[in-house]
Length: 439
Image (cartoon, rainbow, N blue to C red; front, top):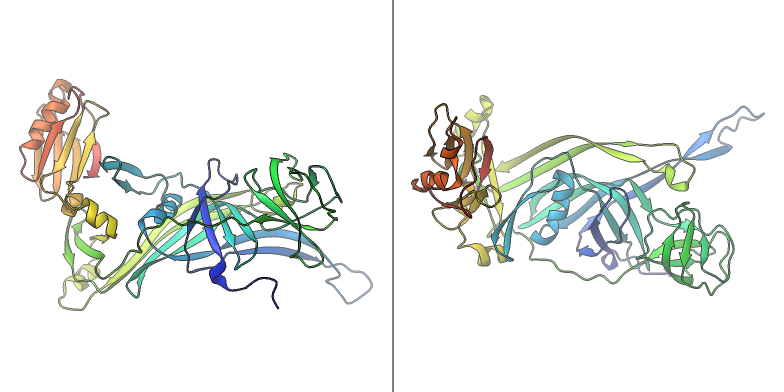
């Protein structure tokens, strides 16, 4: 009989963003997953010597430890943001309705965030911890009308199990061969080395030794032997997740000449993939954890995807033949967003407190396609023009007083596709170009 149920559904995954990259934090957000394939590969290297025998692999030394794998789950609004933040970097966040709805715009940055992740294997009383985790890939597709995500993880280090290195039966000082990855918010289990399962002690942690090999624990009331195993005790998983995003009845695909001028099209299937190239580096060190990468460097970003539809024209073949660039927008809308935000008009603001606000003329998702670009005019005249969904504000090139928030709002408000108002006093003066921004 197994010592605990090997049924995978008893397991869990939890995640938390790290304050300092590569420094573990006890995860507090739990998510439901379909599967995970994270592996910790402890390499051993043969020492092949001439020693009076044909046998060569007589001795080995511990080698590098490499960690990585995928996690698969159904996408929903409350959790997917962690993985987008990890892949792209910090989003630009706008408040649509105070304390109710927000828009987070993720673009490629140079500051992707690292995470600590705990995985409980089946019904084990412990978890395996991965920290300094970089999100190196996100694949999004529909699976039987559910939006499925496959996330590729590149942890810097892992805490799976440690060993007691000094026998002890009392006190609070526990010597181990690795403490990296533990936090004072953790509770540890000390398992009997004879079977790797029987719990000899359950201890809370009050300090993690800077030497990498010592712990200060609650009172030790059992005889712990050299070689007994130390693991992180599981927590009670609680879930706060939204409904799973869907394809039929929950998504729409828009295509056009550019991302700000798109129209909905009939689409049967889709697949999107976003990837960060990373490079793990190892550094010399005396502690056990030095076998893991000392850093994981983020390199290039790339993406690819496809959308499937029935053949009814030569338009797409022509674009392919001429390598024509097109814009694709895929909207996946959860039930909460649909009911709470359907009547909200999209808007954005420019300036800190005394600038101006541009608001879509009609409420609903169509306003998200409107873009505003600020340029410097070739003349000393303030002007605002509209071409489809693209709004261009041309600043007077010499007289800053002509470019106040109040005056810009008046020029933009005269356009039919949007409205505009001054923010605060409207006295801020704008003199520099601003890249295109969607409402």
